[in-house]
Image 1 (cartoon, rainbow, N blue to C red):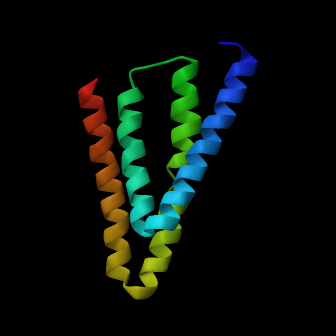
Image 2: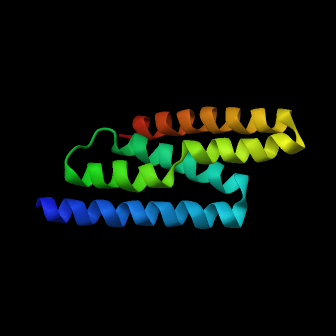
Length: 109
């Protein structure tokens, strides 16, 4: 793959990941952020044994833009206004769910 193709692919994947996360978060609120983070961790687990430009484009750009630590913390800050326990549960579920999803993806390859 040429450098230009990697740059274009990287840009398109990053834009697509960002748009998908944004639309999912708007549609589903904190559950959308949770969903994209767990799904992204699973897909990254599937990609862990691959290498090359395609893995970089999909893994780093696409999934890096799809998943978001800042989204976890902005959602948990909002949830903490209603209930600190709810916010703690949200963060805990995100971390354990994403870790389990990544492990499941790794187990499948």
